[in-house]
Amino acid sequence: MFFFLFSASACCLTILLISRIFAIQVGLVDKPNSRKLHHGHIPLVGGIAIYLSICAMYVYQDNYLPHSTAYLIGASILLIVGILDDRFDLPVIPRIIIQAFVIILLMMDGVYLYSLGNLLPDNMQILGWAGYIITLFAMWASVNAFNMTDGIDGLLGGVTCVSLLGLGVSFYLGNQNNLAMWCLTLIAIIIPYLLLNLCIPFGKKFKVFMGDAGSTLIGFTVLWLLLLATQGNDAVIAAVTGLWLIAVPLMDMVTVMLSRILQKQSPFRPDRGHLHHILMNQGLSAHQTLLIIVIMALFFAFLGILLEQFKIKEIISLLLFLSVFSTYFHLMRKLRFAAVKQQATKESQVTVNETNPIIYK
Image (spheres, one colour):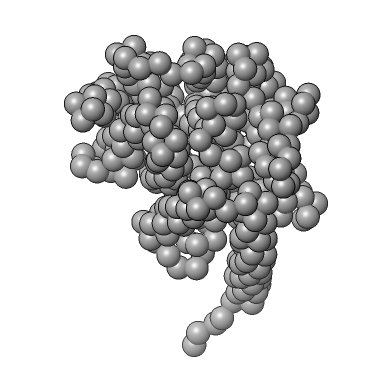
């Protein structure tokens, strides 16, 4: 097992070091702008390296993975579209249509959200045809939640590893050892990207970013595993437990988009209102912010698994999750408004100083 995991990490690291050279040559790089404050042109090869490593490890692994063929076809399509988006900045609508097409392929293979579990006493909540529609929105939400998480170095990789760890533990406790091992393999693949993204140990010269290709791939992968974990006869956790495993990216996405709508703005309009932005506005460094958010994600994942193992009723778990989300939403809204007000005050002070300069004698 350890040799297999080491091979997965070595494979990804090798691909990262090689692909970054070609990315620079073809212009597949992230350039600084008003929202992206990094220095230099950073290769967007994280997603490519992770995808190729997944394919390589899939070929060499001996154990059966359910619905893996549909997953790999969908992942391939999303990766290609993501690379084109990273290079040419594609419009939103075509990307959403292609994402819907990919999840339809997955649903045609039998992977979709058809049950919400036992939210009511002795009553399995079967969704019927509505499950297909909900799965489409769940896929879109998963992809965009993890995409929005990719705001500071290490954050997307760190939060993803937490979700995969929670899924791996859940599969192991549910005697789904093949899928548990696959979750560990994915973590092993992501670790080299994390190290280069955080400039460890090679320094800033070898820094890489995930890109939309990577964040889309990760969102799709986590959704695939969540559906395998929560649906069907081989389900290992309740559907509501899955919410705890992706709590931080999910709550952040919903909070940001609802805040934009309440301010009569487009929910897709980029801003600096995400959790990592707000924490850094409070004076925290990027590394401190990363540590806090990863600890939050670990806590929520641990709590969700704990509720599952103690067989707490699913409706209680859901109500607790909604209470946590409500608290998070109101706190983030308050901090968001405070940050906007502070920024407006600074801008007004600058305007006053420019209009009425101080004259020293």
